Length: 596
Image 1 (cartoon, rainbow, N blue to C red):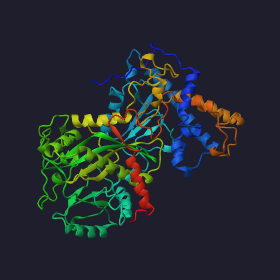
Image 2 (cartoon, rainbow, N blue to C red):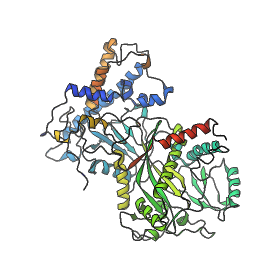
Image 3 (tube, rainbow, N blue to C red):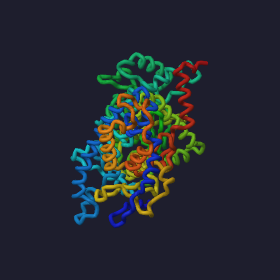
Image 4 (tube, rainbow, N blue to C red):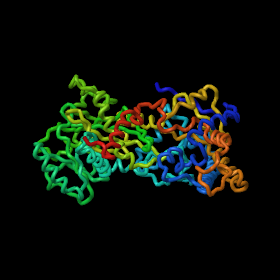
């Protein structure tokens, strides 16, 4: 059985408030991530300024304006939620805690999606999973609370201004991640580095995708490549797909140039002619890659995923050249392949429910089946080449996606193996399907979501889960406390840090009043508001630490690059030695140093 999380404190289980010394100590741990007041805002976070120096440091007037905006938002939150919680509060006779069971220091999430499967799985995992239950509360909607959540999860690109967020708030999309997820942008970015390596000792190093052409602009290049390939391949097949579609919509297999049409922008990608087969059927891989920072790059790959298996046996003949159920492995296409609902076919027959369902099987089942068919099959070697492929694709686009302190993204990578076990990247999905159509779907996808938002086992943050009855942060009972040292080192992958909204309002209220009434006691120092922060005298460090200790009662915010104590099923790809090696090659070819 999964371990049960520690219970949140109740009114009958009061714990003493933290002492001023404990608050100061907690604040000092947070100073590494927030060395000044400006750094708590997303545009001026420590990482953002370090890797986007061109934006410059903010003026005191900028900081004051941003602080006033946040003060208004969270003052309104406090007023509205105090009334809301008076009706839906913990432990009332009518049982209304099922409607709202949070407080000012709770971890609030919001799911904005027109797709019910996205709302269902994220809400289910955050509120019902034994490892997370008791930590997360859905932020009530329809009350004008705007961006006062800790975590926002959306299907499409969120309609928010990232610069108006606090740096510890988290959104599951990067503003310019289309450079990785749009088929034409990915082809353009990978092609740029591939072209730079031609004629150098690194030629072929960035050949991570099959040859891809963007139409209409690359039509002449496509014709030349089509004819050259026809001279060496018995069946010259290509995949044509719209640049912005997903789930197999508009995709087709073409065997003649006459079949290539482009009433809308499309990409035409070379077909991998000799794919690795599973029991005579073509398959590809759906892998889950989590990026928590692009500049610098921090990325993880999950050990769980799927093999998506074609419903009809593979054969590359003239008769089946256009047969999608032979050549295209998208689950949304293959589910119409003619098999009875719930019936397993071909290499999936005999698998248990947690190993295969529909047109998919687990990666564990796949690796076992391939090893049985070929005892020399080296799973670890294949996984290493896949990790290198993912890293190379991210390095190709990392300079196209600016640092954003409040963003992370879970990508769905579609990868195919050829018979020589070389992986090829087909495409990257910005919002991989979260539908749970069978137990295998539910098992894999719920675990991935859980591992994104998991907390360290045994850790209960002060104030998290407390109702508005308390209105001030408190610490949990001794039974669920961990040592201060453990709390400062245990981290998650995505860390929407718990923060006390009441304390935030009080801090902003006092600092805004101080900056207006007593210029000598300004927001950050005694310097003029016309000067920029890099010109200012050091602020009151202990005063800032006390404020941070009150606002951030839990573990100090995780710094990019810190190895997670409990990554769940995720394996870190970057930073790593392999990532450093790939970046060295990129720098060499971009500077023209790859010759010879």
